[in-house]
Length: 328
Image (cartoon, rainbow, N blue to C red; front, side, top):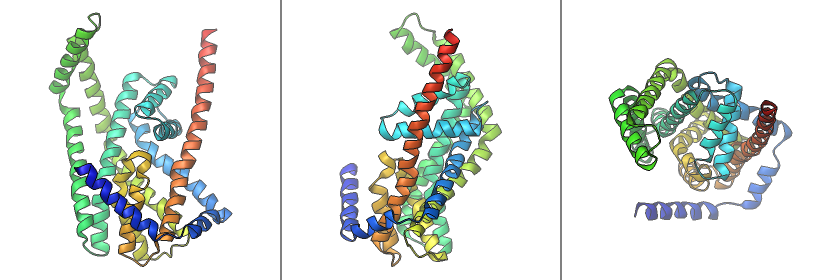
C-alpha cells in the first residue's frame, strides 16, 4: 500500500511539473552554458569527489586520498549501471590489488558506507533547522526531518552498539560458523568464526574511535558541497540568486537528499519533489529549475560514470600487467 501511495504521489508531482515546463527553453539553457561555466563545473567535481572519498581514506589503513577517489568513482560508475553488490566487489578488488589487508579493507569500507548513510539520512534535519531559523517553520520539512532523522539515529545507535558489542560479535560468529559448517563440513568451525568477527569488531572500533569525528566533519562538509554544486548549476542556467533564494534552494536539497539513495540517484523522484517545493515557496519557474537539475545530473552522474568506467578499464589493464609480471 505504501509503495502504491508513493508511486501515486510521485506521478502526480511529475505530471504537475511536466505541464509547467517549456522543454525548448530547457534545451536552450542546457546547451548554451559558457565555456567558463563548464570549466568551473569541471573544477568543482574533483572537489566533490575528494570530500566524498575522504572517509574511506580515513578508515582504510594504508589508503591514500587519491586512491580513495579512484576507488570511489569506479565503484559509483558500476553501481549506476549494474546491480549491487557489483560496486562492493569492485571496491574490494581494487583495495586488494593495492596491497590493502582484507580485514582493513572490509572494516574501513563498512564504516565509511554506514557513516555516509547516516549523513544522508541526517541531512533533512540540517535543512529543516536552517530553513526554520533563516525563514520560517514548514511542517512538510519538519516531517521529513523527523522521519529521516529517526532513521539516521537508529543507524548511529546500531553502529555504536556494533563496535562495542564484543559478546554479540562472538555469538554471531559462532552462529555463522555453525551454519557454514552444516553446508561445508570442511570449513572453519564456530570458534574460528567467532574469533574472526571479534577481531573485525575490535579493529572497526579502533578505527571509529581514531577517525570517527574527522569523518563526521567530512561528511557534513559533503552535504554542503553537494547542495553548493546544485545551486551553482541553477545559477548557470539563469536562476536569479539572492540570500533568500540560496537559503531556499540549499535547504530544499538537504531535505530531499535522502532520495539520492534511490536508483539513478532518485532521477525523477528527487527532481519532481525538489521543483515542486521550491516552486511553491518562490516565483521561480519550473522550466529554469528543471534545466538546472538536468545540468546538475550531467555533472554529478553522467560525467562521473564516464570517468569511472575509464578509470576501471585503466585499473584492470594495470592490474593485469602486474599479475602477468608476477607470474613470470
